[in-house]
Image 1 (cartoon, rainbow, N blue to C red):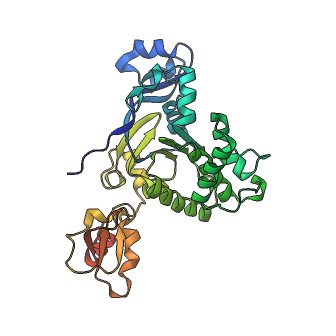
Image 2: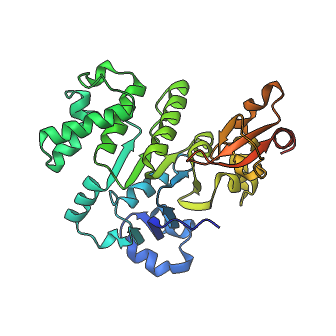
Image 3: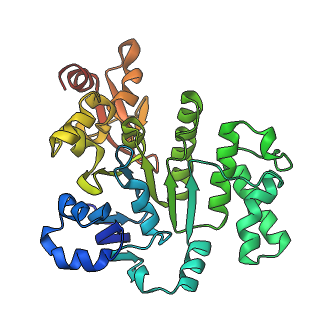
Length: 340
């Protein structure tokens, strides 16, 4: 059995209530702090009793409809918004015990953030935009520009260092935002609907780029989205929120194949199972002999399906190091795609 990865970020019974005397009211209500009672007390329950754990190197997607509390939760995780109650542990340390000055240093050096609106500084070049957080850290010009150039190349914009934001497409601007957040070499990376403002084709390209970056960097990522297709494409684990609470958490497969509530079932109703089931779930023991075509273990059955055109009967499944870990058979793919 694979050893569980250590937790990078843990939330324990986290609440955020907006309104006067929120903490006192929550303590008084205790187990009876349901939305109706909180609202009757004049409070707005933005996040309700959320507990979750994000493992090191994991892409953890938080999703829900507008107003579900997902963006508030990610701001609580970095203490851009102060929780009403609960604990938030980063590398085992309770961030709520950190001073304001300590939190500024943690966010500057250990956390990266990308939001829906690119927020590039219009008067600065691509290079200076990416280097800006390093300048805030106090790094020497030569060092920060060298690191910025490395990040710009990583996101595929080498040669555009001197361009101004207005000279870039929307997808290129978002790449600059991603490079800027990576320049501080964060341990924990927050992305709040980073691609939702992009056109569908560019959005797909940015998702591909994001997957490529993660295969290289192996960051611990909290990714916010309202798009279930995006969630199942990117996530190692997903938490679905409704009315401030997490109604189900699990792998994309668990959520699609075994929805816990009618709300989750409705969310996942139109998702073809082949788009979410990983090839590792249906693969068989590896065949002897040299493999022909291959597919990554992270791929879904839908990703692998085109490889079976032209009469191909089996495809090797490989891990991140290229080692064959199993084989995917044509009959199993057809059975899943047609029968669920």
